[in-house]
Image 1 (cartoon, rainbow over the protein chains, first blue to last red):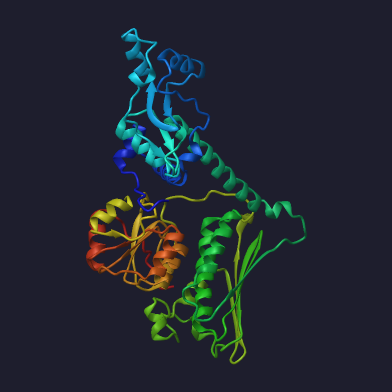
Image 2: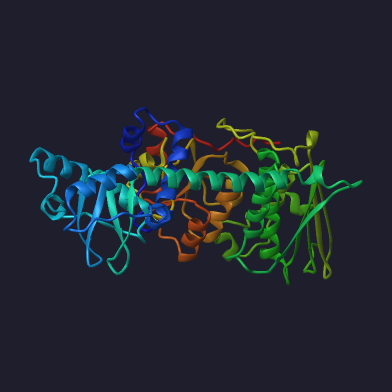
Length: 345
Length: 120
């Protein structure tokens, strides 16, 4: 999207569709809107072009319009756009009984143009502001390269929407059927991430990737949420507390998700006390970042069905958490999103 | 409530214009402790916070927060804005303090999306 991207106001959206917008509409609008900034005029304009010259008799222009079933022609003189002749101009000539006159006598000379590398939203604005039906498109050297109509824009957006939709559908389909397509006694998808100690800027990135992957795999949004909160806390623990960082691993199976972290130190002396709310060994710097309040493991425990913490001081720590999936929701596409405030995890 | 209405209510300034503001916000959550956000917030809320580091965005994302408002006119670091833009998370800064902001939004009809944690 371009920096001047401006979201549609409610009134505009309302006016465009002639009825109040629903959530569903709002989602669609923002997608179409995004496309209207992403798609360039050259992507949707028509290249096949008929042109007229200033000397061409109006009746010949009329013939070209009739044969090609179009309603206007750009007028070029030595490759330079000098005007545009539309049916309206021709009607004026007819009224004067002047069909043999040269195009230059009736064409519109002040031509509003757009440039090929602009986003299509610019063309939409120009159409609205100037009340025009077609616009000549110029390239960076001000040479005429095409024409654009409102129809071209609608078609362009529809094609792009269909393409986007298909791509995401195919991706989701492939991912969510992974567990059905691969036949084995036990299929496991393993995701592995190396987490660096002290790397706060990257903190949470692995969890973010995991979230996307789980949703794509068709996991239930509630389960995804629980899993990601637990994984995120665990990821932050590796960053905050370990000497050399560690490995974060996620194993997805149709009936359960296993999350684990392994590190090589410093280790935890008392693996019971760390589960007490408020117990923390975090530094002031970590607390300033909004972590280290002694809630991490408490949070993790609440999100998962099973949690095991093993540690040897000087050697390292291993944390294993499991979430069991009722009725194999992973691998079965489900649309469980709703707007109700959900049970908290 | 639409995010754009919320920005008006709090005299907010949108910090990453690349991100769309056409978002429905269902409730609100105020916290400076990220674990609290993870533990107590419910999806589709706006987060009011005084923290501005990149972790706020990651936390919000994991907790399915839809937008972040920084209180007391705080300006986040560049990394925070970058990650937020990348992850499509609207960032807003408001001159008001946390209490005032919560009050304004609550009075305008935005429910609290913080769950009460039981003693268990």
